[in-house]
Image 1 (cartoon, rainbow, N blue to C red):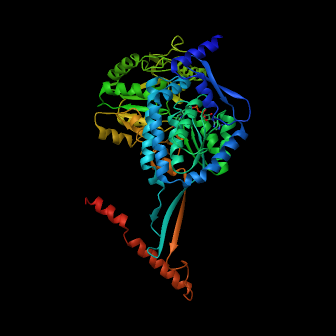
Image 2: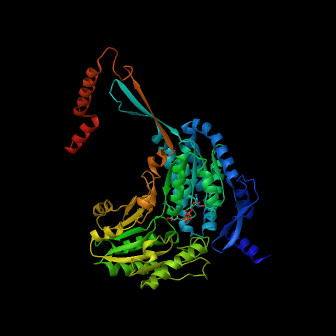
Image 3: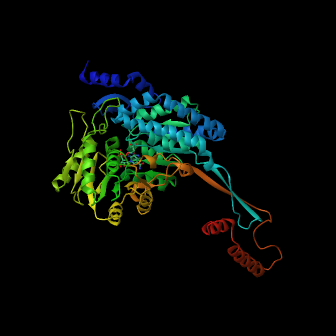
Length: 539
Ligand code: NAD
């Protein structure tokens, strides 16, 4: 047995996933050619399997199948769609051990962070099964001249939705965009990242077992630069999660094709510790915010601003809590922080830390790769005295590296937090939640969590999630997460025939009448404005 084969056998044995199970998952992809892409386990840097390297023709067939299946899916009764989603949520929990194993196998993350993904998917399923249809129920709106005219809005699925997902949270970040599209009556073609296709294929397997009709959910595996553009050229909407750089390409192509798109992109997220914060709690929160998934989390904090009155005490607690973290690649619950995904990611993290060091930053803890733990493992790292021009200060590191800076007051903390092109997530720590909310209102981010790192914001599935500025366009989660996948149609009726000059009436008289009507409408308070005034007056 070659070393590579032995290593593959060992890593699979540690997970309980067989090579034949992975091959069966790969078989779900319909590809004409024989080219494949190797999938490697970051824990050992071993090839564990291969999936088809799809081309444009494969994408075209997948989209055609999805399109053919979509109309009957859109006609399926809402109760039946709801039941399929609920059954799928149950299956995800029932098969959690396999999902956790596959997630760890292809991402190298620790099991505790894989758990977040499985739990999130189950919560997302219950939310959309329960509340999803509220976003596309027919609505009555105010007509032009009530009651002479009426207006109502109906919602239709856009058709075939394309989804492109990243490798860092391959389960959550696929499903969270796929599920609302499906529940709204669209079919979906998903392109997972080439490093993490098996998680997406396991998802497809469970959706099929839950009763989703054939071809409503298709997966095309392959390279981003080939499969991505081919998909965007054929679908009716594209939902993208990944880097800002690729997001711009996706937006350009979607713009040319005049299709809608949502873009969930990068971040350089701030964490603020105010002078009244509980220091131990804030330090624990900062550890979670900075080092979850080895920092390969779009919501992770990479900049910490601490009130100078508690700076030293906070840093001491933060460094101590970080040193307590265990680094490892086990397929059990022993390790706190897992591996980075690959050598590119490891090199990026090292480059950021080396550049920071060369520019005079102090490494308070960490700062080294740990090959004896895993080929791509890197220590959770805290920097201080980081030069504003340092790469780690300007660019997203997307790894276990954070810088800490002391600030004289809240206004400066907010100013520093907003001093970036990004605006994805922020975290504020304070002893006074109302003060935290007031600070949150000043931060230019799509999500701000008070006295929490990121979980309370992400897991509030009923509330929108997305980014300001270079962190993206559009929102996922909540009704907004469904509305993006719908076409609205306004149906207006007139009880009095055409709204035009009546026969025999001079146009000047008609014009006078219309001006009088417009004036009347301006003066007549609407129900909404009366309600608002009553509420403002304290009723
Ligand atoms: P990436 O942009 O390189 O890849 C993301 C996906 O896009 C992959 O599936 C990839 O195959 C595909 N892709 C690559 N080239 C493409 C092209 N030309 N056209 C269409 N698709 C293409 O992202 P990455 O660097 O692998 O992922 C990390 C980045 O993703 C980080 O910046 C992170 O912050 C961001 N991210 C954002 C969120 C969010 O919700 N905002 C979540 C996770 C990750």
